[in-house]
Length: 196
Image (cartoon, rainbow, N blue to C red; front, top):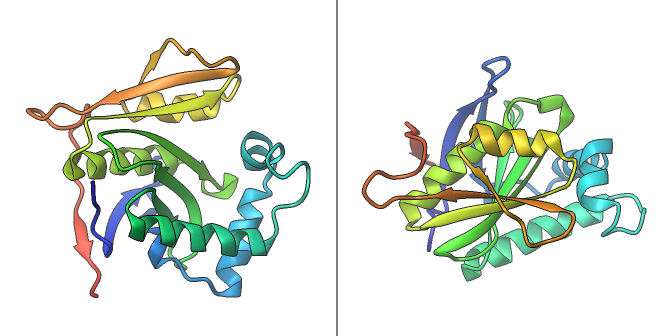
């Protein structure tokens, strides 16, 4: 499964209508301001608690970790093994991220978003599902830790269905993509080519 390297999909914040762009993480700047923003988001209480406290053994998510995340995202994108997308704001800084964790045809997705940009994640996940459908994926799934009701709500709004989980401490959600009708939700997304 492959995705265009240079794409930009406009998505709206469902709370305030503010426009964002979903782009491949390969397009994200590794300048200091960008790294600072990524580290700041990953240290926000909700993002840090759900995703990084255990992994980092309680240490702060540093800018160097953001630089490593961008480098690994680029390497895995170009090797075709993992596809990370960033949601950028009007300043071209990261506001959120989502990913497809394998080349398919069935793959896990993940995501995180800044509290300051609440309302953007549902449409980002919907756009990710449309991209996966166009790339030939048959199904996507996501796992949420028990009690992460905001993440579960994002998945439900994006058309995922809760399924029995075999993994203790996690909920499982699935999204089936039909070849005849496309993804669960009909999406009208305009991908703009961005040179290169």
